[in-house]
Amino acid sequence: MKFLSFLLLILCCCLPAQSQTQDAWVFFGDKEDVATSIANPLTILTQEAIDRKDLHGVPIDERDVPVNEDYIAQVKAANGIAVLAKSKWMNCVYVQGTQANIEDLLNLSFVTEVEYADKDLNFMPGPRNPSEKFEEEHPSRIVYDYGAATNQITMLNGDFLHEQDLTGDGMIVAVLDSGFPNIASIPAFSEVVSEGRLLGTYDFVGRQTDVTGTGSHGTRTFSDIGGLLDGQFVGTAPEASFYLFRTEFSPTEVPVEEAYWVEALERADSLGVDVVNTSLGYQDYDNANYDHSYEDLDGQTTFAARGANHAFDKGMLLVTSAGNDGNGFGTVATPADAPGVLSVGAVDASGNYASFSSRGPTVDGRVKPDIMAQGVDAAVITSSGNVSFSNGTSFSSPISAGAITCLWQFRPETTNAELMQIIRESASLFENPTDEMGYGIPNFEEAYGVLQNLSIEAQQLDANFALYPNPVHNQLMISFPAAEDTALITMTSLTGQILLQQKVVIADPAISVAHFSPGVYILTIQASQKSNTFKIIKQ
Image (cartoon, rainbow, N blue to C red; front, side, top):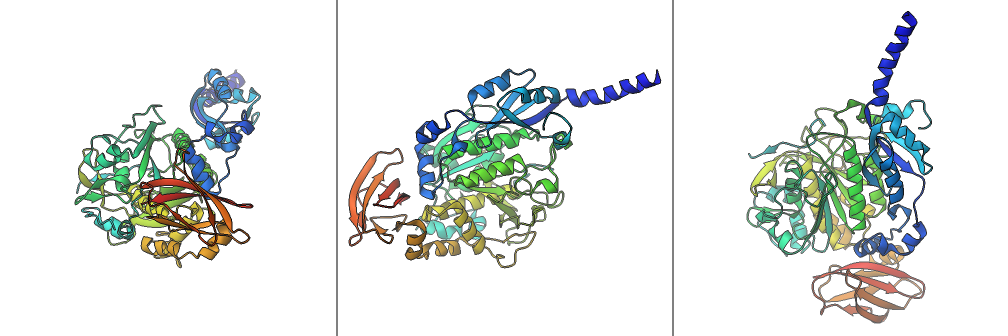
């Protein structure tokens, strides 16, 4: 009887672990019609996305092909399984179910692996194997009157970029956050809406276009990039175009939010987004079994970090809050740990380190955060439309992201990796980075000078054909590579309509664009052995 009682006790202890709901990623082995999709990229990507990839030499590959919907349907039909999200880059779905039901999915021929959010389960024998996430709001040759935003912009010399007519025009920014209430009715966003620069919205939590969400965090972070109330408040890229994506459910902290976030990155890439701002971070969850340890935050392990690195590889530039755990966990959360992310810490109005700002280095010794910006008493627009002030790296990140967008507008052919390094090298502590401040506060006037002074000869070697100036007012000049003296120029709209075709020779390399309306165009240069594509901004 004693042995039987002991056996029953063991069963009672084990059954809950097997029967309680678990979260997991389920990976698939293949996709359908890969070659056909890659050969016909407009079936899986927008023209804007294709143009951006062409501009930076980013290949369209199997990662761009959607997840097999039949596979997803079979997983959904499995006993006790709920599918909450999917990732085409990693060819997987995020599911909830009991451990037994999830492991049964391994019997499906196309399922190759299961990865549990509870990392302890990934090492169990079997067939295979924040603290507060948001900050408290504290009410407390273009020349703008920046009003309350003056200090946070001039600290970075973002006003210098605006004076060069670099305000984000023609660039596309995605903001990923928890909710964006009242965007359509707030005066600070009226120009974004009326000029058609709010390109789209989507709620990956609720699977709907309404991104009101939970809380007003997204409205405030978005304002630091795209808001404009001249004389009261100006964002760092007030003339950019935007997608707003809700990936967060504020009342809880659960790992499916990492999956929603990656899914939003994939959507952003397919839509041709240039810069992504994320004022979110993940380290501890409501269920402590899902927490990320310091050892997990190596930039390669978490699902969010893996997704961020894919996004970087696809040519986008990701700007992310370092986190607000300087007085708690200590180091940056994920995805700020990813090498493919430019992570931003917080300083006060005088440029001093804010004690709440998460520090570096990463477990593998990399400098994080990358740069710093104002995150103490940062000016924002609230969901009621008023100017107010907030604390947190959630605000230093979009302040930086907007300035980066304006800088990239100047030389959009620059790759994301090149631009990130130029920004780091412009920062105040680049020669002597610290754990608290990373490379320090960037100087966007200095970064602009580096881009401006890149030699045309170097461009010839590195990018074959080159052109300048860009942005352009009236006349583009073509720089020819060695062994080429004639080329065919084709200029199209973003929708692919051919607007200009002409032959250009090395003896007369000028192209007149004076008759084109201001906007963004795609210019392709074709010669006997070389072909290059550029995004042109006509002013």
